[in-house]
Image 1: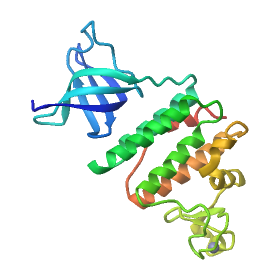
Image 2: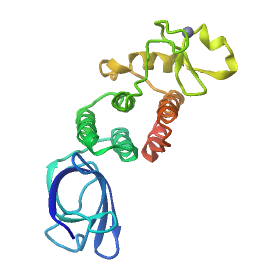
Image 3: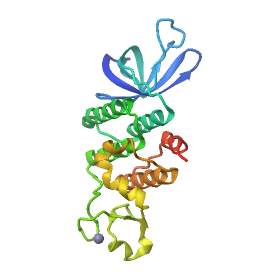
Image 4: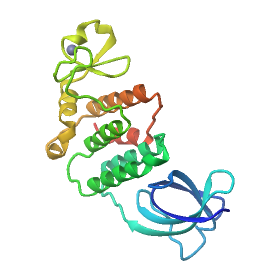
Length: 248
Ligand SMILES: [Zn+2]
């Protein structure tokens, strides 16, 4: 083992390994996405299990070979509890998204802050949570330099409320442009179009928003498709599938 280091960490998941150890996946502002082994952690009486989504300060030994950091010490910094399944699944979807991104080391801190703001916002939320996930996805796109333009048609460039997107790369197009040729575009439902237009300021509307499973699936599919088409990275979020099942 090499030297000992400290970093903050949001726990993404934590699984038993052998009789007494744990394998932990975490996202950290300095180290990024890492895997950690906590040896004899489950049997030690003075060591509590690490909770998913909580934030800890970890003391770790750097890996000498392979990829696993070794956990030396963990102290709780921020407890993050989510009182209902929708809030929990929305928070997990955001954390899982972070685990899927391919980032360079100078980007970790900005994305860590994004995840921290996101989980903090969700914790106190009384309204519909999933638009906050969509809004975070827009922020991730912006940070990646592939910002989704919600206000302009990507074919004619006019300011409009685009109601369709290209099958090729999910760029939004206006009413006129979606007709030529129609086989190359997908129409958004009026509800999905409205939510998309308001997404940057959706925080004010969460109390009155009523979402059907169909609209949730439509927007998940569109936004992830846009992300994948512009980054050529495949993203599959298990928690988002669970979250969709909580709508009817
Ligand atoms: Zn147009």
